[in-house]
Length: 131
Image (tube, rainbow, N blue to C red; front, side, top):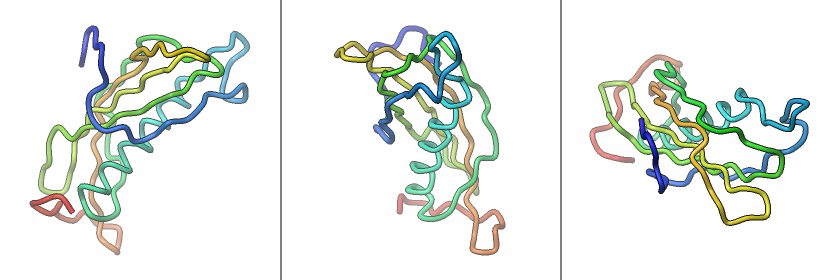
C-alpha cells in the first residue's frame, strides 16, 4: 500500500457525494460506507475483466488513512494487480475531493479479491484476455 500517494492509481470507477445519512454525530462518514463503495468498484472492475459475474472472496487489507466528511466527493479507483485461475486481485483506492474545493486526499486503500462465477454460481476460470 502507498505511504504518501499524491495521485490516484487505477481507473476511476465510482464518484459519489457523502451525505449526512452516511455519517456519525461528528460528521465523519462511516468506514463501512466507504468500504462498501470500494467493494462496488472492485466488483465493477472485476466483472469487466472477467467478462461476467464476480463476487467478493476476500478483503485482504484495508487501511483508513483520513476521514471522509459530509459533502466530500468520494472517488474510487481500482487497478488489477493479479489474475489467477478463477480470481482477480485488485488494489482499490478511495480519494476524497473535499467539499467545495479542488483539494483531494487519499483516504482509504485496500486489496480486494474477486472470484468469477458461472451461471450456476460456481467458480469459473477468468478468460486469459480482458473481455
